[in-house]
Image 1 (tube, helix red, strand yellow):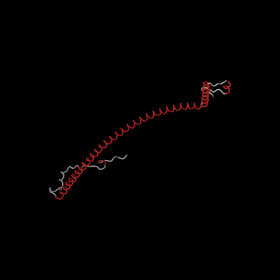
Image 2 (spheres, one colour):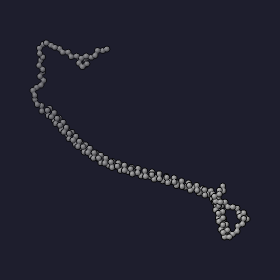
Image 3 (cartoon, helix red, strand yellow):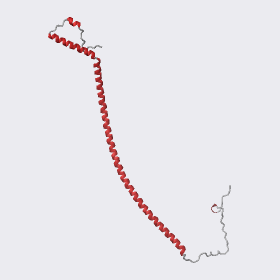
Image 4 (cartoon, one colour):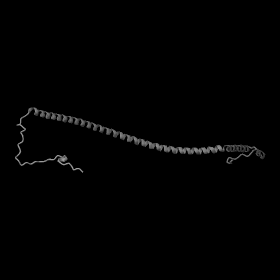
Length: 186
């Protein structure tokens, strides 16, 4: 391992103070003359300070103007936001009202549809019963026709008997007996 660097702040430079027991040190050298005002050099510094003050005043004025403009913009934005919130609130309430009306109409239409379906089912049931009745009438039409013809014939004979006509047994045997209305001829 290498030894760590020594000296002042690890730079390796050492400070050695030599103490001498000899006479007192010599006075310092005279470097400055008596105070005298240097007009040209001092006016440059004062002008610089004045320039800095003017720049600072100018920046403060600009900052105030910008702040006033920003405040006006902020107030305008807040007013516009307030108006927009009011408009949005009105639009929302109108939309909610429209939605409620539409939902009411939807419920009414659903109820009407349900009632129409019930009515349709009743009509279809009635049509089915009519169809069954018509089918029965068509199916037994010939039987009913023969029965009715037999009844008409019987009524004519009864009228003729009441009028005095003579029907002998031989005449009755020649004609076939009519079928009754209720008899099934399947």
